[in-house]
Length: 82
Image (cartoon, rainbow, N blue to C red; front, side, top):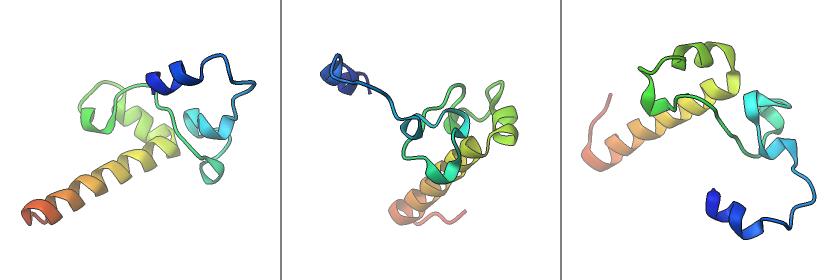
């Protein structure tokens, strides 16, 4: 992310909110990208994780997709089904 920002720095004229997606703005259906503040799905024991899962639908979706991919990887790589 930082390298892309450095590469294009000074060439942007505006930022489209649908590529930021902070707190699901404007809504999940129209997002083209996301940016999350706070604990990541692999930090599920961190303070604030459960609060964000319950409050923000985009954060919940991101965590669900993350865990789905982790389970799929474990199944496809090691034959573990959980």
